[in-house]
Length: 420
Ligand code: UD1
Image 1: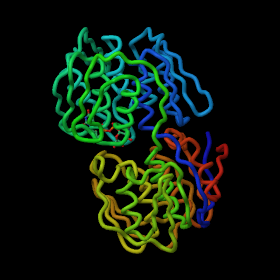
Image 2: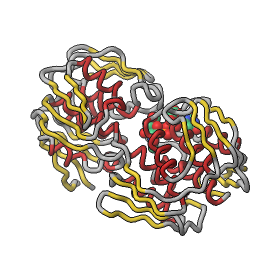
Image 3: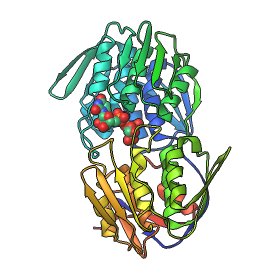
């Protein structure tokens, strides 16, 4: 087991390129199944969740291998339509494979993804939409058995703009006869990336990034070469790291248009954020100020995935900031760990109030989830002395090598083996 050791107190300076987006590559890997051909994904991040997706592709009879930072997937050999329970449990977002397998094979079998560290992770909207497209789905003993000799396009309405449901239904709709529209679709940039990938493979998808996505189904798809978009949450994490530690950093490839709610809060707190064609720079000097309440919301609102890292950046701010988490039930699990470092945070249900303290002190802490783990790194950079961060496999699910990036920016952070 590894841990991260962070010696805080220094500021960050330098430039780093932002990795490819985890939340883009996972649905795109599922989408490769629709092509039955060879796909080259450039800028593909090497992450635990990507490895889990590769294992799913391989168990289905497909091939996937790395060539530098490109992932080459060949889904011509697909010969199974079932994903084992062990693989499903490795990655909660694996439900995204359901729509793609169903569209390609006419049947699919997988276990129910169940809850996760953020709370319940229902897929009722995914299943309702697939049923509306003509799939027969039996749910017994935690297993989902789906059949659809024919999927038929139609007008679907999501009761809430779920990212995963929008993506799953876009994939299934590619295999449906006729036209499907998805109303109240999620508008996240990763959905636009999925649309661009599908269209590069010959699909006819439009409207991604707006609330209505339209898919003309049954177009013959082929392989392609595609560059994964930069990870806006990784970019948000490093901006918050600079806000926490102070200093001046530049994130190559980061796109401010996808980060505007995060950069607006950082500016309000006193950072200078400047974007140009190639990336986003951030200068932070002195203690930050508190900011108006931060309420997480579906895109283009403030991302729930950036809540923990922003909270960590504000631990030493002047004044108090209120957070309201509206997307997931259990998204304050990092708070107890931050409190060990001297943070003043009160949680009541979906609301957390952070009152800035002058000093944070390094402490032994452990990651409770992916973004909560990143928040511990952000806080540790501003803490006096050493922080040891355990259970970092959570962080590795979403950051290619967080310590390398932060070291490039001048942080004192190393990965070591944990001796018990
Ligand atoms: C995706 C992201 C995750 C991010 C989240 C919200 C990926 C791989 N993960 O997760 O990092 O935090 O979007 O931006 O892209 N819901 C239902 N029924 C459903 C589906 C969702 O009630 O069938 C609820 C969820 O419990 C949650 C809310 O809808 O409260 C949003 O979930 P959703 O947008 O689906 O998130 P994910 O796609 O799972």
